[in-house]
Amino acid sequence: MAAAISQTSFAGLKLRGRGKVRDIYEVGNDLLIVATDRLSAFDVVIPTPIPDKGKVLTQLSVFWFEKLHGIVPNHILTATDFTGDLAPYATELAGRSMLVKRTEPIPIECVVRGYLSGSGWKDYQKTGKVCGIPLAAGLTESAQLPEPIFTPSTKATTGHDENISFEEAATTIGESLALRLRDVSIEIYKRAAAYAAARGIIIADTKFEFGLGPGQELIWIDEALTPDSSRFWPADEYVPGRAQPSFDKQYVRDYLERIGWNKQPPAPALPAEVVAATRARYREAYERITGRPLD
Image 1 (tube, one colour):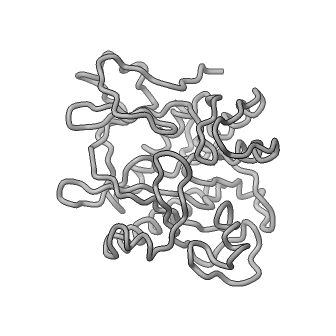
Image 2: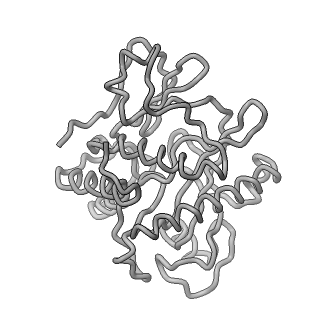
């Protein structure tokens, strides 16, 4: 098994910050995003890294950014050409890094749900709605929705993101931008879900982040339809009315639920068998969607 990378350090580069999963460096006017093998669950970083996870996140993001660039521009400058100031670190950066344009991040996460799962399912059980959107009565867990719904959330740098209504998002960022984000997010989801379905994967839900360029151009940033930002289910095992087996970090979430962790820091370490099974799921999701082995 490949060694896991839980943190990066490049002496010649200025560290801008460390997120839950990614380390970000400044490179002139641009940013270098390096996906480590850290994993977060319930918005807490797990102390045990998952080998190859960062490569899956980066390479799958690059795949989707390239495939769906006709819908909205994205922030990638290069994910392969690490020259100039980056040349000394090219080996460490290979496969898990993107040099990207800086943008002004929009302070909400754009969640699209095609199926009733996770916090959406819990919300529905309590209120019959998801983020204020009324749904038909009698739906079961993992049920497919008649049409995908846009359910934004806050974007917390620490702690938990919180689901909000479209109206709350519009109050935060303006109605015109909120409508644009909703339309673009649903279009990306529909296109990606159809593509994945042909390869035996259901994308139950996903979240996107966007920024604004110098001319207020909308730009797709961060990651794209990865096992960290989405729920991927095997289509041949899909049975509504229960939780689904998955190719994403839901496997880790389920383990943490089983052991009764209170979802507050510090998170418990993962046993070797959970690490190995999670790594296999990430790799299989990548290989099924792209049709090629992980580089």
